[in-house]
Amino acid sequence: MMANEKFIVVCTVSLTVLFSIATVSAFVEELDDTFKDTRKPDEIWLIEFYAPWCTDCKLLDPVWYEIGAELKSIGSPVNVGKVDADIHTSFAKEFRVTDYPAIKMLKDDLKYTYRGPRTKDGIMEFAERVSGPVVRSLPSQLLFQNVMSRHDVLFVYVGGPSDLKEKYLSVAKELIVHTYFFSAARNILPKAVTLEEYPAVAVFKDGTYFLYDEQQDGDLTSWINRERFLNYLPIDSYTLYAMGDTGKLVVLAVLEEKNPTKDSIRCKTMVKRVATEYKDFYSKEFQFGHMEGNEYINGLIMEEVTMPSIIVLNMSNDGYFLPPNKVETKDQLLKFIDGVLKGQIKSQGGNGFYQRFIRMAFNTKTTVTIIFTKAPLLGIFLVFVFGFVGSTFCYVLYKTCHIVRSRMKDEEPITGEREEPNQLKGPGRDKKTKKKNPAEKKAD
Image (tube, rainbow, N blue to C red; front, side):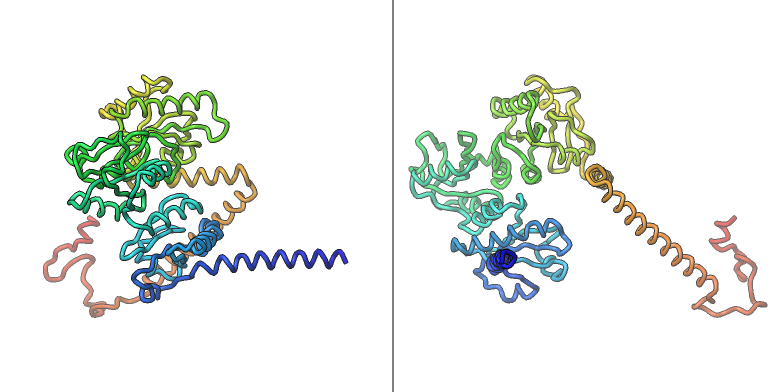
């Protein structure tokens, strides 16, 4: 009787799990190459491009189905789909998919790429931001304060119709993938905000605000790209990658991931203090932050980075600057930053072909080392498999070349007339001119 009851319980749980999977998967549509012809113009789509062999795609699967179900439950206009890019290659090519899983949003005739962490919260926030109005209106002071409390960085257009507003709207369409854009009347702003010119674009962050000045700040797109991060913030690999568009160098404190030491806390505090106290001097050229763990930085500079340490990164070309001496005080950090700014400290690394090849070799070596350390039997097995495959490939290639060369020796020429033996000329000689041909000259 007990065995039967256990069997019933197991079956019930299994059916519940299968039903749950089937329920959430019903809100994610499998798309194919006919999508372009069947999609309605006003539809908004959040699409995952995956490959069946991709491990990260499999890890994202349950998250993706949850996103589909939740967007449906809150009445979002966003449709959620997924595409097997191995089968529907033309579909993937149209969206310029280069890696997996790739997450894209299609709204109107624009395509947006999500480059943040593959988490439910991150993707949901992206979908909510991009699917909504490009510029959101703030009609009251209460709503303005509410939005300010929810966003670390806030871009606001202040004023009525103008050329600046048209530029702002155009930039918002392009950069909505990164941040929110708002508009407000002049009387909605906090009393502490003083506008020297009107209309204006302001950014609220770090407990203050800055006004856009075309003469000093350049074009609006570049200014918004530079200002869309806090002056100092915790940084992960996704954030660091996004900072490549800002044109700023990144002053980064690399710290222990767990149980930070006193030296790590001191290093973090020092970088944050310089970012705050010298904001007026460095904010246009430098971004400040800290990263927990050194794995990403190790792969970038191709050596083990001690923790804590300080490094300056140029994410636009994968370059980096290392301090000539250990940085332990604020004055030493300022001297290092000034040396980078004035060109006194040489940039290393980069994204040239040689550097990319060396970086790939380093990452491969690191991966193999980790495998042998954590799973030596798996490491031995993989070495055996790859060695066997490699040696087999070389053997097949050698035999193929040998057969081709043997056949070439046995075959007669397939073009031109065949000469009789008594008509053969001397080796390398032209019968009429008696000159040596190029091959004979080379032999001489």
